[in-house]
Image (cartoon, rainbow, N blue to C red; front, side, top):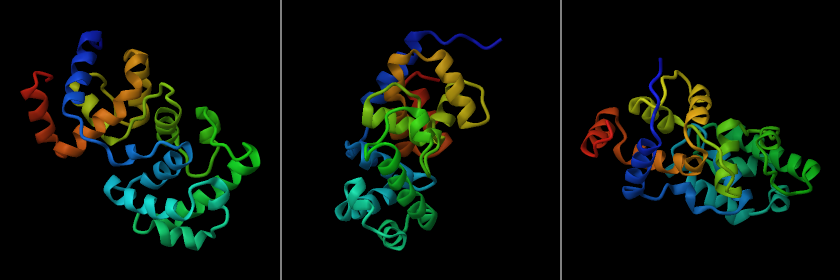
Length: 205
């Protein structure tokens, strides 16, 4: 039987992570359009690569209408060298068309509507809900998945399993901060050995 994690443990971990928090690069964006597009770009790409590419794109186009004035090849050139930049350029343009046609040019604010857009999976949808609309959702990337397993909060094999399990057990008031805090710690310590040392030093493991 899986052990029950007391709320005090969640609070202790998140308070400690907040104490050591260093800004996650893509947290600089606040506009829903910029948050969604930069998050699409960041899939399987380091944030340090994504940030300058996103800034180049937004300098040229920072609204849906301006984005629709660009063609796929121009978007691809602007966002290079993010991973899979040609596919992402195609998805970003299609996403803009969908937002214009289906949502009157406004980024939607529900998970279901966001996931209907090209290039938007569950993690991207949850991050957009969190960052752009301040709605509680647990966005699980590799950092959240691995660290919550090491902490013993979950015993899961995939990020989707992790999200489902965390959603059942972690109080909703903590959901919005989880991704940024866990990503920040993961970026700072980078390896399993260093992260576990950090957790032990702070009496979290």
